[in-house]
Amino acid sequence: MISFEDYFKTTRNGLYGLILGAPLLLLYEALVYLADLGIRNSADVILVNWLRWVRPIPPLYLKGVVLLTILALAVFFNRKKKFKLQYAPFLISEAMVYSFLLGLVITKILQPFMNMPAYLAPGSLIVSLTGSIGAGVYEEFLFRAILFGGIFFLAKRFLSTPFAWLLGAAISSALFAAYHYTGPMGDSFNLYTFAYRGVAGLLFCWLYYLRGFAVAAYTHAFYNIWIFLGI
Image (cartoon, rainbow, N blue to C red):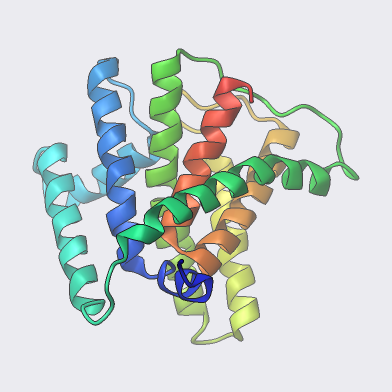
C-alpha cells in the first residue's frame, strides 16, 4: 500500500519531473528519427535556437549537455529526497485521468460564450504521436516551466501570490495560444481555437503549479494523442 498523502507531496518534486520526463523526451527523439521527415515540435525548435545562439553546437549534443546539467542540479538540490519508482505508474495514471477530463472542462467553460467545434490537425499516426509527445515535453517546459514559472517567481517579489499566479498564467497562456498560429506549419487563426488553447494553458498552469512538471507533461501528451486518435 502507498500513502497517497506522501504520493501527492513527493511527486510534485522537480526530480520526478526530470526522471519521468526523460522517457517522453527519448520517445519523442526516437519518433523524430523514425519519421525521418525533418519535422519537430515548434517549441523544441525555439528552445534549440535559443541555446544554439548562446553556444553554437549540434542540437543533439546540446540537448544532452543541458539535460545532464539539469539532472545533476535536480539531484543536488533534492539529494535528501528519495525518488520512489513505485509512484511512477500512479503518476502516469493520474495524468491520463486529467487528459480525459481536460477537453470536457474546457468545453464546459467555453460553452456559454461560443459553440464551435475545436480544430483537429490532420496527419499520419507517427507524425501525430511525435507532435503529441513533443508538445508534452517541450511546450510544458517552455510555456509552464520557463514562462509561467519565471513570471510567477519574479512577480511574487512585487505582488501577492494569487496575483503573481494570475499574471504568470495569463501571459504564458496567451503566448501559448498565439504560438500555435506562428511558423510555416501554424494553424489559421480562429477565435474558438485561440480561446480553447488559452483556457487549456490556464489549466496546464494550474496542473504544473499544484502537481509539477511530470503530471503536466504527461497530461498534455496524452490529451493530444486522444485528439489525434479521435477518442
